[in-house]
Figure: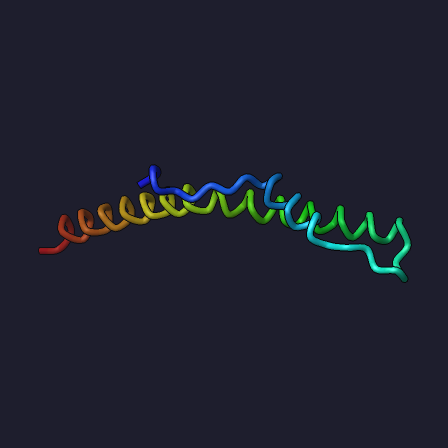
Length: 80
């Protein structure tokens, strides 16, 4: 399953986003840089979260399956 996992490079993704944005004429350099930095950081964190999502879901599924197994064992054990 992990062989088919999608993994996006957060830096490459974020850089491609900010490269696509052009500075408008009425925007100061400082405002433009702040906007670019904000966009970069938000994109980087979002992609990093996405990359860890699949691993976390598998861990949660395993915990859920273990919990269900214990529930079945306990209900069978205490059911007359």
